[in-house]
Amino acid sequence: MLPLKPMKEPKNGRHENAQAGTARMNMNADRAFSIVGDWGTSHLRLFLVHDNRIIDQCDGPGLAAAIADPGDAFMRATAGWRADHGALPVLLAGTVGSNIGWREVPYRPCPIACDKLVDGAVHFRHEGHDLAIIPGLSCINPLGYADYMRGEETQILGALMSDPALKSGRQIICLPGTHSKWVILQDGVVERFFSSLTGEFYGIIKDHSVLLLGSAPDDGFHETAFIEGVKRICANKGAMLLNRLFEVRARQISKELTVGEAASFLSGLLIGADVDAALRILDWRHAGYDRVSIIATRHLSDLYALALDRYGVASQSLDGKQQSGTGLMAMAARLRDLERSVDVP
Image (cartoon, rainbow, N blue to C red):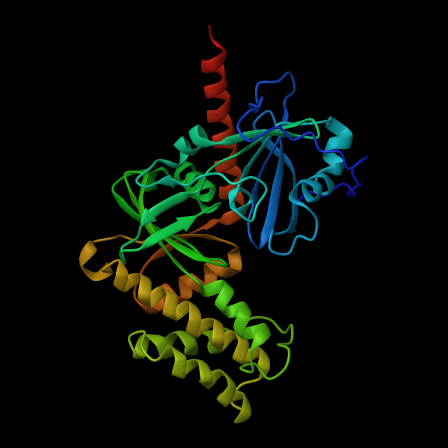
């Protein structure tokens, strides 16, 4: 990660907010710098872009943990960049466009190509910045009910640009996280997707239940314990998860697992259950898919790859942060093209 400049407080608390949609983001302004970012429930990820290259990046708390108003939090996070470059055009994706975010942006229904999402962006101004927030996606998932995503669409677009093979035929993308997504692509278009509560469920159990006997020590990942958890799910064809979860506590009491090993075992149970359910929903054995493309951090990608391998499913891993940056820059480029077409008399 590139070094970050120290954060500075905004010079004042004044907000120059126009009504959503009344200001247009000026990506064609006479300045080569801009900010693109993904602001989700758990994380804030911002990139400073110059001439279509990421030259700096900034990570911060997600909206669920943000204490300040989103506008104030954004100003603090970007204080160093603003001190150097002034007010910049900004393109954001993620939960920032939800009803708990900065501006609510309606979802766009599937099927849809991710680069078309900027067509439905909401534009507004804040403290001299021209901002645009892109919509998320909605669909009726393979289980027959409504499903939603915000933020992952930028990573999907980045992956399509990083690996052109994903634009051909029927492909599956897995995006592990707080609310993991399994995405069905047809010739590069998002056809449908479905969600699972894997990451949030792990956090709830780890921090707010009696399954782990004390705080898990920071002693690293225990692969053997993780694979044991996946095997438990695989052996029972995804059934009896609630019973297996109590085994996390029982095996600590019997001294079979340390707290650290139990945490990895718990992770194996939950990720194993996620993978098992996804393969059933996708009818993997009969659908003829080639592999799963995992977009995540290196650690999460490795965990899902281990679980998929246990089921005999090939996978490839794509760095989540890199795909997010690539996808956001592609969306910003499309927005510039749209603005040029509007500006032409």
